[in-house]
Image (cartoon, rainbow, N blue to C red; front, side, top):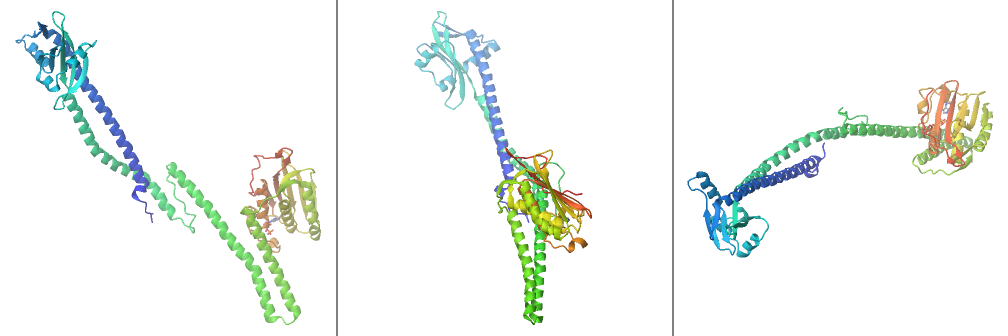
Length: 494
Ligand code: ADP
C-alpha cells in the first residue's frame, strides 16, 4: 500500500509549484521588459515627429510687430498640412505671458504661467516635458522662445499627443498579461504532468521496496538501466538489503547455533538427573550422576562465558588495555604453558623467536590469541606431529609476523572461509571426536582486528595448517602503519 502523502507536501506538487513560480516570474519580467521597450520606442517616434514640427515652425511662422504671421501658402496642400500639424498643440505668447496663438488642445493642457514662461525663455536650449490634459491624455511639449524681426523674444511651445503610444503600450500590456492568465495554468498542468512522469520511477522503486520484508530480503529492486541517480540509489538500496540479509542470516544462524549448543549439555544433564531419580539406589550412584551433571553444567557455563566475552568484544564493551609488550616474552610464556599439554598428546611444540620485537597491545588478549591458536594446533594434530611457532619482523614492512604452523588434520578449501564464523566447526571423522565450541577463532579474528592487524590461514588436508598474523610493530617513533596490510580478517584460501 502506498503511504498517503499530503498533496502540498508531495514532491510532485513542490516541483510543479517551484517550476510554475519560476516560469511565471520569468514571463512577468519578460513582459515588463518588452512593455518598457515598446514605450520607449513609440515615445521616441512621437519625439522625432515633434522635432520635425519644431523645425518646420521656424519656416512657417513669423512674428511681425507683435503679431503672429503664417507664411504657409493656403493653396498648397502640403503647406496647409504642415500648418495644421503645427496648430494642433501650439502656444505663442509674449515674454509677459500674453497669448498670441493658443490652440484649444494647449488650452486643455493649461497655459504656462508668466513665471514658467520667463524661466523657459531664459534657458540655453529648448525644454521638453510631458504634461497631461484634463482627460488624462499625455502630451509631449517642446518649449523655448522665437525671435521676431527686431530680435524680440516670444515664448513658443508646440506639442504632440502621446495618446497613441500610451494606447499601444496599454493594449500590449493588457493582451500580454491576459494571455498569461491562460498560459500559466496551462504551464502548471504541463508541469504537473512532467513532474508526475519524473517521479513515477521513484514511486515504482518505493513500491518495489515495500515488497521487501525481513523474510524475503533477497528480493532486489530491478535496475532501470538508465545509469542515472535513481539507478545509483537502487544500487545502494540493493547493496544495503544484501548486507541486511547477511546480518539477518548471521543472527538466525547464531540463534540456531546457540540453542543447539546449549541443548546438548542440557539434554545430557536432564538425562543424567532422570536416570539418577528413577534408577539410582545407592549414594554412590547419586554421586556419579551429580558429578556427570556438574561436568555438563561446567560446559554450559563455559559456552555462556565465551559467548558473553565475544558479544562484549563485538559490541565494543571490551576495552583494550594497550601497553608496550615484548612479543618474544609473551610468546615464550604461552609456549611454555602449552608444553605439558603438547607432551601429553605427543606433539612436538617448538618456538623460534626473534628477540627485541615490541608491539603496543593488550597482554591478556595477545595471550588469549596465542592460547586459542596453540590449543587448536595441538588439538587438531595427531600424535607424533609438530607445532611450530615463529615470531619475527616482516622483511619489507615494520610489522611483527607470527606464524603458528602444525602438521595436523588440515582444513579443506570448502571449510576454510568459515572457520572464523561463530560456532563453525568442521564436521568430519577426525574432528567429530575433538571437543570444541567453534568460538575460539571468532575471538582470535576480533583480537587481531582490534589491534589493527591481519590474519591469514593456509591449510592442506592431511598435511597441516598455518596461521599467519601480522601486527603493527612498535617503533621508537610509534606504531607502524602500512598500506599493504589493511586491518582485515579475511581468511586466505589455499
Ligand atoms: P573449536 O572450538 O571447534 O576449535 P575454533 O573456532 O577454534 O573452534 O575453530 C573452528 C574450527 O576450525 C574447528 O572446529 C576446526 O575444525 C578448525 N580448526 C581450527 N584450527 C585448526 C587447526 N589448527 N587444524 C585444523 N583445523 C582447525
